[in-house]
Image 1 (cartoon, rainbow, N blue to C red):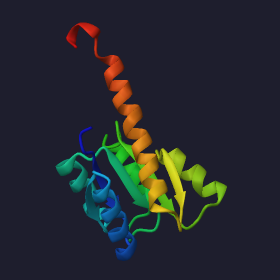
Image 2: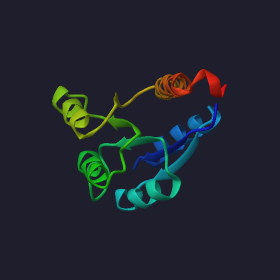
Image 3: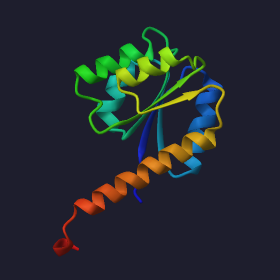
Image 4: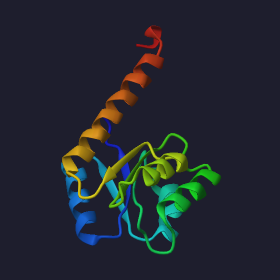
Length: 137
C-alpha cells in the first residue's frame, strides 16, 4: 500500500507530536499545522488524503474551516476526522454537517485513530481495485 499523506491540525503541541509519531510509525506521512490560516496552503501543497482537525484552533474553529475548504473544493476525496473534547451530540452533528467522516472525543487512544485510518485505507484500496477491469490486470 502506498503511504497516505495526513494533514494534522492540532493546537496542543504534545498531542500533535504524539499523533504525528504514531502516524509515522504506522506508515503515514504526517504534515502538521497549528494555525488554520495556513491550512489551505498546506492542503494545496501536499494534497493530503486525510485531514485530522481539532475543533479548538486559533482564529477559526474546525467547522468554519471545513466550510471554507468545502467552498474552495478542497474536501473532495478527503477523509476528515474531527478531534474534540466536546462529545455532545449537537457538536458531533455540527461536525458531520460540516463534512467530517469521523469524530473522536478527547482523550482518545491514538491506536483507535490509526485503526480508523487503516480501515478507510483498505476500503479505498478495495474500491480502486474493483474499478479496474480484469483485462488491464
